[in-house]
Image (cartoon, rainbow, N blue to C red; front, side, top):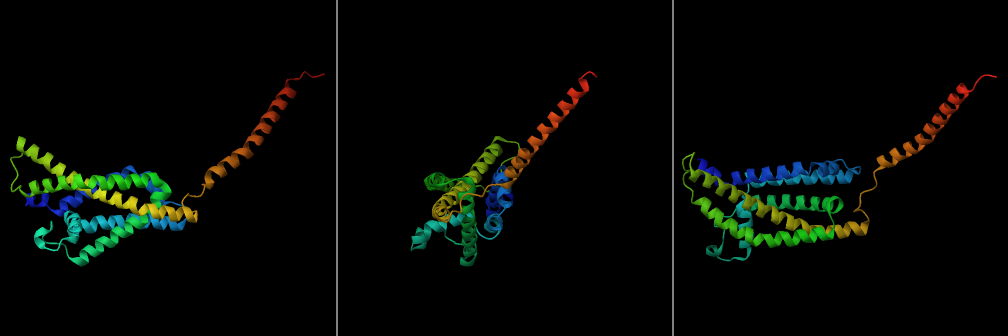
Length: 246
């Protein structure tokens, strides 16, 4: 039972959710700024990104299959079943929901990325890195998944074989997660370029200045003359008190 769970899509999905949650916690400051943007449209966009991404993670873990997504994408042009990587594909309606959630997540993420994270250089770097890392990660994942399917029982708990099994499982999970993240980031950079161009043409890419610093400096500018006048008044009063009486 445990061996079947370790090789299941649920275990991989939980590992993916854990990694994404750790990344989101590390970036909690920028995420908080996006969700608290002064413009309602940008707040709604940030909420749509978080909601669609969370829904995509849950749907891919509980309904779809993360491993088969990549394999079926590569099988798109294969005419014969013997040439396909995935023998039993996921139902079409399930995959359609996955693609819709992915599209919503990317379309909501790209304006936020262009506005808060980086411009064309970083986006092109994401495209190159994501699609360059795809081939080696996919080949390594195929080998690791083949080895994972060959585990029929776990070795004794306190043994060197168990330690090797744990290292192998962690490597397999991290490779699968890295492959999925590389694909998402590559697609993010690809979609972000035209979205950034549109935002630049509309003049909506740069966030408006925060009024809080301007208000602070204005109040400070008004406070300084009053403080100086109060100091001079106190000094003059002290000088009058120190003068000897005639």
